[in-house]
Length: 338
Image 1: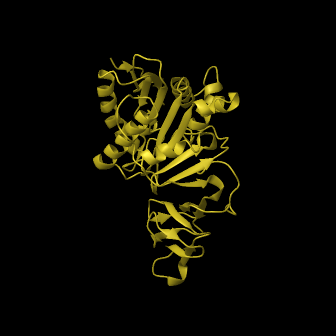
Image 2: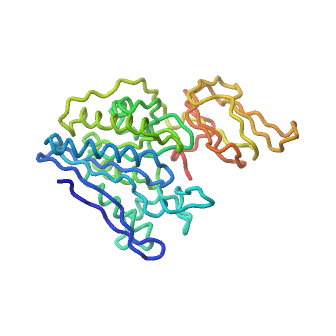
Image 3: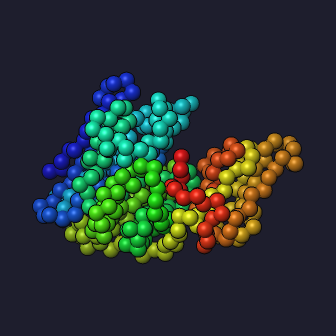
């Protein structure tokens, strides 16, 4: 039987809302796995991936193939999923407080009595995942290649996961200090030196508009194959082999918009752009050619992410590139600090 491990939290009006969670447990004492999607509620792709994966897990459980347990939270955020503004979901930040939903998990988990509904939700989500040996958090970017975001403690073991998911890039990080869910879960492992017996990563499943049966089926199959290879499921499924470019976090180049305006990309995702080569331009005042600014690559690298909308504000992130040396703009912290 699939175990229902859903939990309730209170919404902004004080009414109970449920976070759906299910555990597929085997008979043995194998690894405990926690999979979740939608912490940022406007990142939809992982929700469909886990929905499809649950069907494979149910079949595997019925056949006695699951060695330990797999807990799945396919839509983790009960607050952001209902936040619509002018017909568009805005699920990265909590409307009522302005808090990034994927920040401050560490502080919430440490509170004996969380003081806000978001903190209560964060604490319960951490408590659900804390016993796991393996934690994978599914996200998406604006427009992006599929990429893995992984702490150095789990590299190069993470390459197998990235290859199984056909991810083009793996970004390796050391310190975040913003209390993301991944940071909070792995912190005890890093402190007690047990990271080599665990695995954790954030999977960026392309862009926010990349939601389809074809992509979701591919990703669900990749996850299932990796779980088999990692010893969680006893099934003869071989993960894909895929070239993965490993990049140090500090080598990633983020290009910010020097002015607001109409954003025109001249390069596609995955393109290699040489240092100094133009890749986009911003037209501030249509009708005035002098208001156009051309954007150039800081160093040679592959275009990994692009801003989704084609009207951008000053100071916003236009694109991110891989690099082979530390970015002159690097100051530590997360890839997306906000």
